Structure formats: structure tokens, C-alpha cells
Image (cartoon, rainbow, N blue to C red; front, side, top):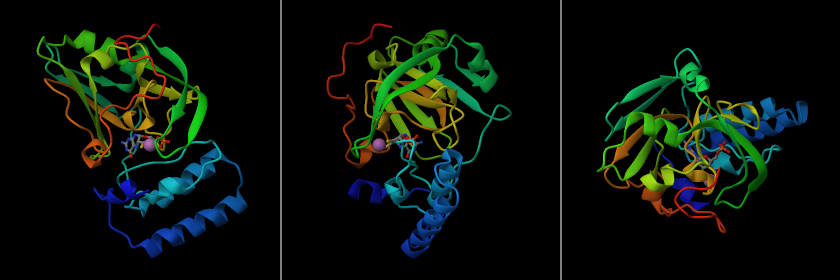
Length: 241
Ligand SMILES: Nc1nc2c(c(=O)[nH]1)N[C@H]1C(S)=C(S)[C@@H](COP(=O)(O)O)O[C@H]1N2
Ligand SMILES: [Mo]
């Protein structure tokens, strides 16, 4: 878990005692309202508000997922104020609202989700717009070789090569488990890179910028492989749809 301890960007630093107190309160909340996903998300979100270390990622979640954020608090965005900016080495930079994204053709993928911390959630449906549909519409310049993702948490970043970004199993996801992506899971819009470890799937996605080379992401600057392929993934450029 050492890697999580360097998560210190943003948020108000709070002592470990406060965080453990919060986690204990979360346990009490669980006893009072067991097995409600929304209840759990409130607990996990509350714990993360005082957990600038990222250790709230250690809390289990009955849904199989664990809540991760590298910052203590993330603004909430919805259909009234969410925007996704496509820019960088493209002919036609564009800003999409949530209704804009909902109006585009949607693709649904069911795939296993794996975190490098060892947990997994099998056969999870994600749906949304294919990343490549957005990049193609923007017109990628010939010198564009990679894509950099930024997030409205103000800290997390990720990357893909342009070839990876062309795959049919890379989504700008609006739905997770056939429901709108919740705030805790990075909603209203997160990236979903099905053939790679879940750290590639940036939550709270706000920017997609075409670059001339891969810019290592948040965890990659802290020791993670830029290459996030799952074991057994088909690494060919464009996966069959
Ligand atoms: N913005 C942002 N995206 C992120 C992360 C994060 O801390 N911040 N953590 C990554 C990691 S390591 C994992 S395993 C998944 C966790 O997604 P979840 O919180 O929906 O389970 O989000 C990935 N995307
Ligand atoms: Mo992860």
C-alpha cells in the first residue's frame, strides 16, 4: 500500500487519528444501514474527505469496488455544469456537455475490472461514447501520437497511445453497471479502458488532449507502468467490436 501513501495532492491535510475516527464512524454507519450501496458510497466518500493519504481505498465495498481518489474532495458535476474538452493536436477542438454525449451513439462493454491492489469485479457493464468517435470528429493531426486525460478533481491524469485510443473497447463512459456513473465512481463521466488495469480508467474526466508523445499519468509518475495491459489482453491496436 506504500504507493497510495504518496497521494497528497490537494485537499486539507488531516491527521491519521481523524481518518481512523472517520473509518470507525463508517463502521457504525454500516451496522445501522447494512448493504445499501448508496450508504456505503456516503461512508467511503466521507472517509475520503478526511483521508488525504488515499488509505480509504483500503475500505471494502460490498459491490466489490473500492473507492479511490488522490484528493480529499472532488466537486460534484451533473448535466447542468459538466463539460468535456477535446483539444490539443486536433483541427476542431470541441467542448461537450453531458446531454451532447448522451445524444451520441453509445457502446456497451462487459468486461472484468482489475485493480493492481488485487481486487477484481468480474463482468461489469460500462456504456458510453467510444473515445475514438470523439477524436475522429475532432480531426487528429498527423503529429498526434498520444492522448492525455485530465480530471476535474484537479490532480489525476492518465494517458494512452493514439493506437490504444483507437480501440473499440475504450469508452468515455456515462453508465457503469447500467446506471449513470455515480460521483464516487468518477461520474458523471469517467474513462473506461477495458483491456487495462483500472488505474488507466480516469474518474471525473474533464479533458482529452492529443499530444505528440505519451505524458506519464499521476500514478505513472509515482512508479506505475505506463503500460497498463491486463494479463492476456489482446494488445493489437484496434480490438474487434
Ligand atoms: N480521478 C481519479 N481517477 C482514478 C483514480 C483516482 O484516484 N482519481 N484511481 C484509479 C484507480 S487506481 C482505480 S482502481 C480506479 C478505482 O475506481 P473506483 O473508485 O470507481 O472503484 O479508478 C482509477 N481512476
Ligand atoms: Mo487501482
